Image 1: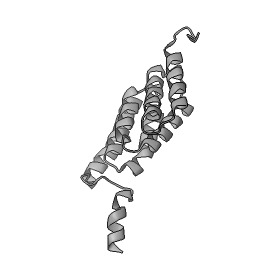
Image 2: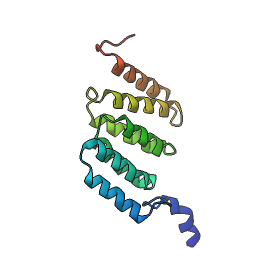
Image 3: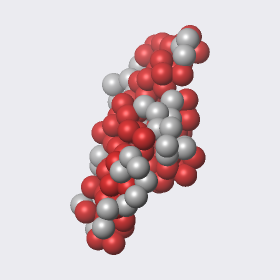
Image 4: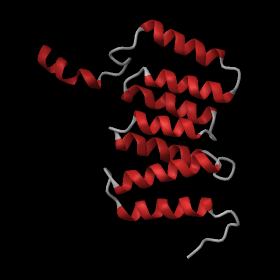
Length: 148
């Protein structure tokens, strides 16, 4: 039984190995004390970085909802879930579904580009990769007419 628990221990949600309770309390205090959405989103990302990837997805979603125009939040999520492509894919799709693309053009472009990289790499879906590249290019096209 002990061997089984030892083997599945990385899957148990909670703090990362080096994260102390004091660090988690400090991160929670920073989230509560944030004066604007940008600070709150970055504090949520800091708290998520202290947790296991399985537990941090909700905090990254909260950070994205707090500041949907932040490219930094998208990039931090990409780094955090680099070894979990399916979790990153879910997070990015939820971001794209829940945020207005026009008002958050740069963050949307970063999310589309991250999905393109996922579909060209570990998730291997050439059709989706091309679709993400086309969507990214359409976002870049300022006048709304898609170039053939």
